[in-house]
Length: 434
Image (tube, rainbow, N blue to C red; front, side):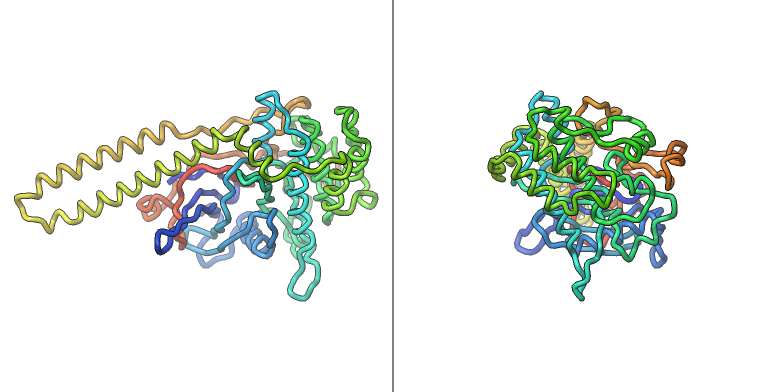
């Protein structure tokens, strides 16, 4: 079993759906941690976020939102099956570009931003069956949750902590969920939220992508929250003077601390940024070429590793069938056939050990400084006021954890969680779990 991203609520696997006639499709399978859910009982409040994510994301039909394909319940827990975006997160692309001393070209950055803003706007505009707006707030719009595929399309993912207007009451008083660096002032104060909170986060993402550095550069989440509620965000032209004045004004309008004076929609922010440069956005083919140039080796290695695991499992299945037929063979042929099966098993075991040794280790996240590229941010719980926030504690929640060791015998035998889906976990992907 190869879990590739894990957080406080769930673990994500790269899976492959197999059907009749050799049909295959790669998917991402997000499985709730067993300790958050008991079959037939109400899930833990934290685990219930995964159910909420399914209810919201399954309704959104937009090319810039990762769709949920299936939702199910199993003794192992609640699981979601989503489209697998082969590519990298925007956060990873920014780190790779920084390492190459080659910032993302503005037309490509704008295309990615406008795609992501379009997906966010689609979530905000979602209505129920009667046509009433659901009032969805993503609450975790950040570079880690923007996936850029090798097809050049950017998609928004991870609605795990999103809230609709009629479900805000379940958030505990004085508690805030989200990455500290992208919280709006009202979110940091644990106040009621609407779509303008996500517009603030979109402004932060735009500022960071175009400036090539973190907006709120503190490594301490509480210090970041205090800065958000007490300081005005600096103009991007103070860092990158050649940014057009209209783009500077658009980002500043999104980063207005007073919510009633803030830009109303993510779509408006995207439109104003696109118009500010007066040039066409990059084509998706150009974005795809950039993704391959920056992350091609990582993506190819991920795919090769997944294929290797699939082939090893096929070999193991074949050896099991061969071993099962030994008892039906004549006694004179059994020793020779059993030796062959044992030899094949030894080769497979050796291959599995080699695959585990070669498996990518999780990358350590360094504390973010003001002049560094965007890196995975931390989540924070803060109280309703800035004064209380200074003494609040915080802990990162989107780090990649080690593979779960508590899988049931059935799950270990199958090499995957015992969930009622034919999506077989294969290997690493760029998804990150809140």
